[in-house]
Length: 107
Image 1: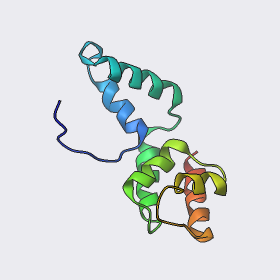
Image 2: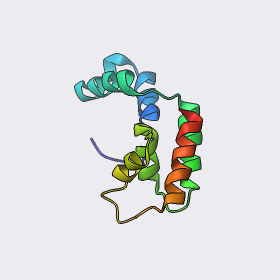
Image 3: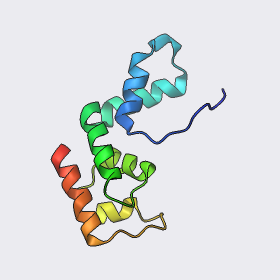
């Protein structure tokens, strides 16, 4: 299988993409991923996309980081800090609070 394009997207979009395909055409790994996503994704596509776009407007948040926030839906400052712990980016309190406000709006 050849990778044509790589892009950070919220898990709900991956779930929808897999659900649109014929179940018989899914590989074993895709079936496992779809089962996992059905059990764990708690946000709809419209809200996920809106939240993703709002998170990108926070400032220094990159697409892969915004996707992680949408997937995890952090509730506390410490949760947000954990998402960004491996990054070279250190968010200030204002940015963290803004991220939490955005998540709260869609959760």
